[in-house]
Length: 356
Image (cartoon, rainbow, N blue to C red; front, side, top):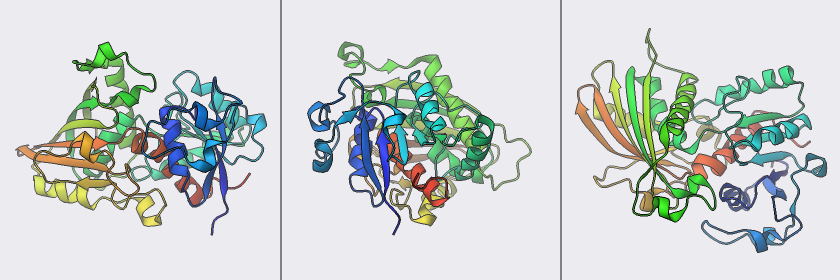
C-alpha cells in the first residue's frame, strides 16, 4: 500500500474547493490535511462552507478549522491544490513552490509558462517532464503543474484522439456553459436568467489558445507535413448550475467516416487507465448514440468516479470531410478538482510527489 499523503486545499470553501474536499474524503492515499480560506479563518469548515455539490460535508472534515494561506504553517502537508482565482493565484503558488511544495493549480496564471505543464493526464502525460526544467530554471524545490480551463477540456479531450489519428484541417467550437464556471456568487441573476450571455472575445481566444497548446503536445500517429490546425470558439453562459455543453464541428484534410471517428473516440484510453489510477474513469470518453443526448442534466455526472468522463454524442456526418459532435463535461469535477486529483495521482506514480 502507498503511504498516505496529506493535502492542503487553497480556497477550500469555493466551488472547486468543495469538490476537492468531497472527492478526497474517500481517496485511498490522499487525505485532506489543511483547509485554507479567506474570510473564514479560525472557523469550522462545516459552519462556513456553502456545500453546493452532491452529498454532505464529510463528517471527518466538518469540524476542521479553516486556516490561513501560509506555507510556513504547513509542515505536515505533502501536496497543495490551488483553485484560486486569476491574479491572486500566481504569486501565492510561486511562494508555495519555493517552499518545496508540489502545487496542482486549476488557476490560469501559469498556464502558458513554457516550463509549466498544462496537463490532461490521458492526453499529454509526457509533459510532466517540464517539471525538471522548471525546478532547474527557477531554483525551486517544489513545482507548479496546471490543469486547463474546464471549457478547453470539454473540447480537447474528444478532439485529442481524433487529432492523434486523423489529419484535421479546422475545428469550430460553440460552448454553452454553466454558472458554476464563474465561481460563487458568480453572475448576477438578471444578467443570465431569460438570456444567453456571450463570454466575449477574450474568453473565446483563451479557450482556443489552451486547446491549441494541448493538441500540439499530443503524440500524433499520422504523417502530416502540415499539422497546423485552424481553431475557432464562441463561448456562452446559461442558467444551468453544473456542466458545460459544447458543439464541435471538425473538417478534415481527407475523407473520413463517422463510424471511424466513433470507433476512435470509444476506444480512447490513456496512461491513467493503463496505470489504474484511483480517479481515472474506465473510459475517459463515453460515447452515447441517442439522438437527444448528451444533455447536461442527465450526463454531467457520467463515469466512475462520477463526473470524470466526458460524454460525447450527436455524432454526425455533415459531408465527406466534416463531422459534428457534442460533448458534456462536468466543469468543477473533470474540468477542475477531479482533473487536479488525477494529475496528482499520475505525478505520484511517476515519482514527482512523495512525502516531504
